[in-house]
Length: 210
Image 1 (cartoon, rainbow, N blue to C red):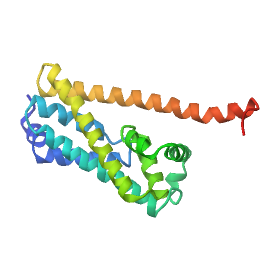
Image 2 (cartoon, rainbow, N blue to C red):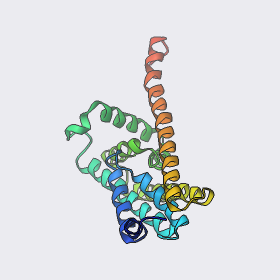
Image 3 (cartoon, helix red, strand yellow):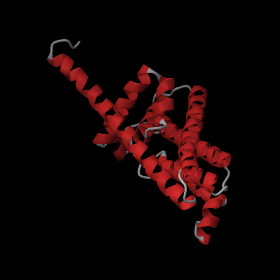
Image 4 (cartoon, helix red, strand yellow):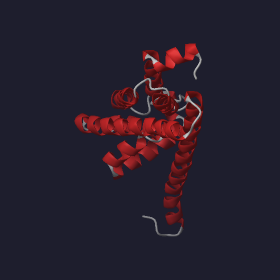
């Protein structure tokens, strides 16, 4: 079982509040473990019975939506070049990648970007700078945030159902699984970006470019 002090924090309103804070922060800073927090509480919801799984999903969805919309508003009213960190090589590359992705399909990109930590920041900033129609953006992001919250909480819930050992074991294993999935997604997306960047140069070198 969980220690009394930790039990009181994680299973009560403070646990949900902390999770929501981490998820909002995760929209801006990829080092903040928003996914891990949702997965851990999803495991706790099943293994301990509190907080309720629906409350974890709802809280995570609202927090994810809030963070993504905040990034959109920054892109819309500040742009993507005004602040120094936006001009850093890695951020500039990600923003360029995001512009290309949004041009190819707004709905698909806005939904899938929610599941990729660094991509979600770039996509939402560029969506704001591109002035995508707000009602359309809000609807797509709300759907993406809900799907992401349910997915992350489900990872913890499934692990807690399958793995015996109580809340602590369920949380530890679910966090390891969530981190592993996140790293795998990062690797796949990174390879996709590199392939996209190399392809135009290769075509030009072969004389097939525009």
